[in-house]
Amino acid sequence: MFVEGKMDASFYIEILNNYLLLFIQSNFPSTHRFMQDNDPKHTSRKAQDFFRSNRITWWRTPPESPDCNLIENLWHELKEYIRREVKPKSKQELIDGIEQFWTIAVTSIIYKRSFLKWLKFKERQLDTDILLNFLNFESCNNSNV
Picture 1 (cartoon, rainbow, N blue to C red):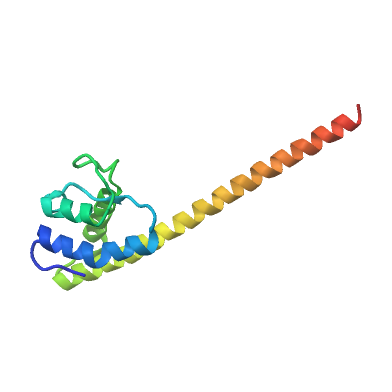
Picture 2: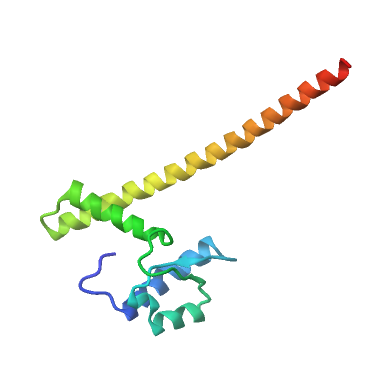
């Protein structure tokens, strides 16, 4: 979805209502933490009322703190990708570049998560193998005593 002009609090809430609620209900029915920056439309009274009435747990972060708010890092990467790779000359090229970046970023995130899960599995497997080898070594040494 691309928005013409500036987004205000009412339109932001419309997006949350149409997309966020369904996403939370589908993926995190029992617990969640919603993270956003401190943009005025995000912290407006309307947004706060929406969060409260829909029981959305908002994880507050300090202003302009990329270490605490990961989306800031993603925005930085998007801007760099557009500036270095896409170099758009039209609005459509900009939109296409954003869609390309999103595909690349999501694919990369999914790959990294899968790889990290595999590493954790291998680490647990290695820990188990080391423990079993140690126990076998101990039992062999104890039987020779």
